[in-house]
Image 1 (cartoon, rainbow, N blue to C red):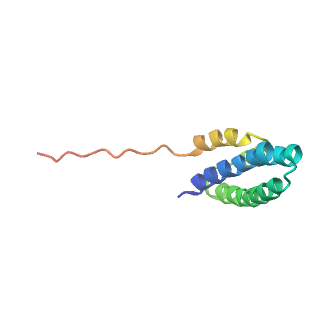
Image 2 (spheres, rainbow, N blue to C red; image 1 turned 90 degrees about the horizontal axis):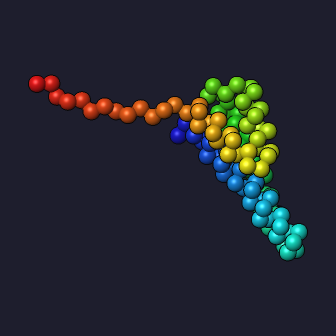
Image 3 (tube, rainbow, N blue to C red; image 1 turned 120 degrees about the vertical axis):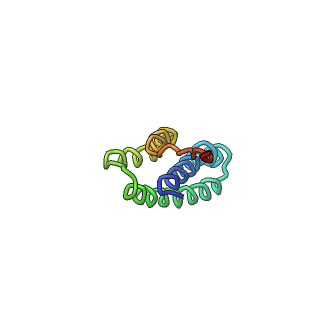
Length: 107
């Protein structure tokens, strides 16, 4: 798996964990008095965020991310639904799949 594909995968997982923390765990804590939800979701999200930063650095080394794009990826990771935007940017960087052409035998 390429560094860009790994980055896209962790980008999605980290983004969804952020949304779970904000829209499921936080209401469970403050509306229903269940603080364990934020403790667990927060810990998982924190670990995923650290791994996201690591993958961002690794992907920046091996793909043509500019410093500006890397900064955009980082800032978007701090914003809810920023994952959707950054995934579109990553899709543009991925090379198109090459289809193999079947060769016919020469007569």
